[in-house]
Image 1 (cartoon, helix red, strand yellow):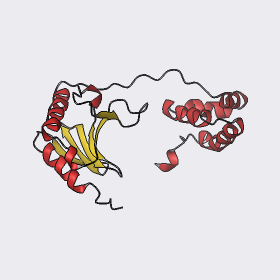
Image 2 (image 1 turned 30 degrees about the horizontal axis):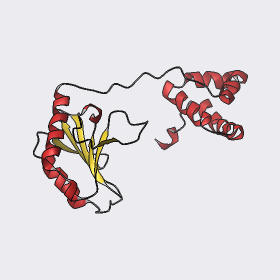
Image 3 (image 1 turned 90 degrees about the vertical axis):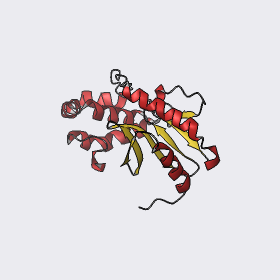
Image 4 (image 1 turned 30 degrees about the vertical axis):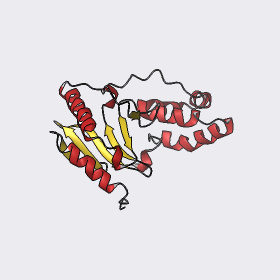
Length: 186
């Protein structure tokens, strides 16, 4: 799949600025990513309405210009974006300052550590099904914590009971087969 050439000149300009630092260029996930000693520091990419820089440990940046935003509020913990809508917004000196701070954070080994997940809360429909079917319970208990969490979120996120029941029935064979909810896509 070919990406459209939208923002290509602006992305090239950002890449030229980043190349003035000791960061190493890589292509990861189909986009330009710059690393320091093998660790991701910043990525460059464009979307429909903006292009920007992605600081992988941006949560630790001081952000003196107040330009960094969370990629997905409530989901993204450490990554921060600096979004632009035109080449005129690109401030090379400011970008270089942010990059130098990001490199320094890497040198210091500053890392976001994920919070430990709390106890898994089973949706009532799933809890009842596991009580009633020992084979289902044994197979569910044999899944990795991540896979159990996927099923709980998938079933529990349905608002109506009939939808929760339908989702449980859809998942039953996957659980009995020892598969995760999304294993068929791997």
